[in-house]
Length: 184
Image (cartoon, rainbow, N blue to C red; front, side):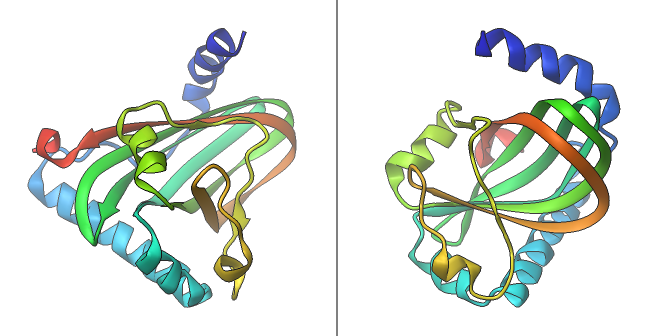
């Protein structure tokens, strides 16, 4: 059922999602998107300085500078981010989300995934990483990273940027990793 539900949600929700996270078409676009990712990470660290220590201890992390989300009963979200290991860019990651429920609105946010171990990061690298409806994210605020525990080797932080979305929905996030050497 889950294998059928997610593609259907994504298909119906895709027209609702209006965001500016398209694939970069030129080296200049890639640089601009990487700058956006760096700026989003700096905003997260400014809100919660304990994320610096967390990232220094992490095996790897992914930063999505902007995820756009929209819904009206059926919802969806999409964004593009960058994966880093030991401070080096190792790939790009797309996030796609589908949801169904009593919901309406639209919002944008930055999202940070922090991977505790090689095993957890390999799930992303091998494109078998996703979040089910019961996954939780921590809103970025001072001290949040120091108080949050890893769940299956991953911590998730969200920094709201704008918009408003209200309601109760069942959501799932799917990720797709592309190694940096395949991006060029």
